Image (cartoon, rainbow, N blue to C red; front, side, top):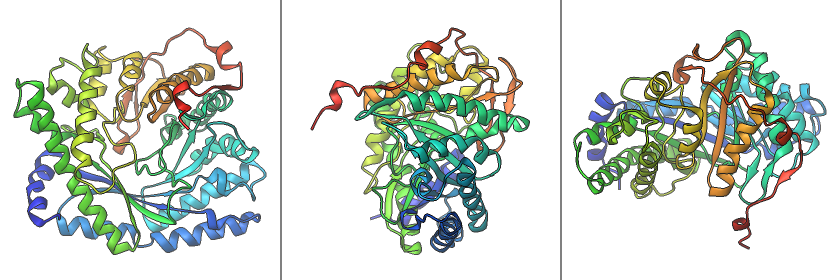
Length: 454
């Protein structure tokens, strides 16, 4: 049972420690909208989403007022459009019409983002999926609220190097399309390995084909709460440290469970999962980097950072999993550079490099996230970065991702401002040595031996 006492206990967390429910995301299947006629397809998509999600924002606002917990975002995820548009879309421009429909729907129902302009190509690409991928730069440039993701590998299938090469080119093209806005289009594009079907966080959310017709997934957050709790046990041993993180994660996740149950009941849509990720914001005191520093690092990036992050991630999962009926999505600790003031400071101070961030992604929840790099970085280098990160996910049987922004016209040391939750970021240096011959080989990297478990 979740009772009002538990809610009251969290009020101080809300007022003093930046506790919030980061998102209520309604996942919607568009499989029954598939049509060979493009106009009919767009009309079906429009009608289904507006029907199911018409009360999503108002319901979220009502729950927020009643229990006093900020619900920052209300979002929608849909079936990967690479599947939905296959029968009707014969050109890139055909797919872009669907992106415009999704953007129109998002604005009409009032959500801040809609995810699922996506393709799942971990083993190979259909002609339609390749068209969708090539349409991503234009689609993100001509829409405000559409988010895109591409899954290029998995532990079971290996890495699709043809798709990884293409995604390096797409990232550069997306940067060019939005260069007047500091290449913001790339901030709405994630390249995954082992993408989960039920992730409520953007920009990587899509509604997996294994999901129900509609579902409610909730993403909670509370870096500030964990930081405050750890301040009270400063200097204590690791046993006390771990217990404190677990207990705090439990309380934070209970809030998400309550919100998810209420939203599910009021909207008449089944509850899916709680994603108990620690998701930072640019706000002071809402930083995963500051948690790591409270654990005992002079700065994030110092020796011991990967171990501290591994500890944090594991204890968050252990505490959170006891607090919810269903835990899923990504669930752990996010380390997006631009969205975390502590990470930004560490980059500026020279304590944190791209290579150290890559090492940290071996034990965190996502991967290389919201990292600004020089605008003249070659597409093959970006493909190499994607391949490295995907390989970590494939071998470690975990989700990894890359959301990287080559900022056209800017170089190392300059700053790029994205605004809102996306924050700002210093442009980070990238290894200058080429991987072009590696990326251009083509084909697939086979799945690791431990994938053969049937």
